[in-house]
Amino acid sequence: MWSVTKDYDIQSLLEEERPVLIFKHSYRCSISSMALQRIERIHKEISESANFVLVDVIKQRDFSLKIAKYFNIKHESPQIIFYNRGTVQFTDSHMNIKSSKVLDYLVNY
Image (cartoon, rainbow, N blue to C red; front, top):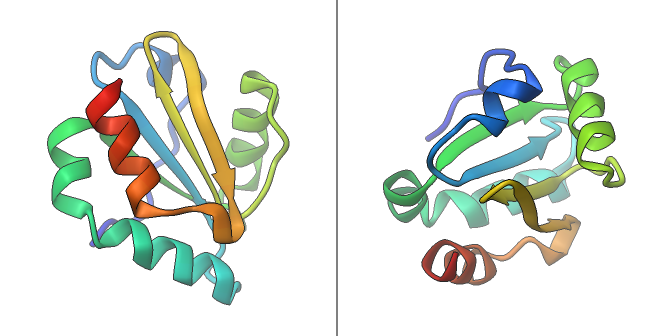
């Protein structure tokens, strides 16, 4: 589905006109793989409504940590962050990452 996004800088994320959905993923973690599969099921809906950023927390550790620091959220993996209208609308991690919750935010925000 999605490939790992090339390094972004935080400012690039903030300048996006569309909502941004950031998924911090570890290819070494089975829970992260399950969470990503949940999100991939709604690939079409996400692509129509938001920009998707897939961050490999191993290879892009510095970028992953910058995201956590800038948004003042705890770094976790897997983690999903929904950014829209100048703020983080929600963040979840591990087994709390659910496609239904992501769809709700995409429709309502």
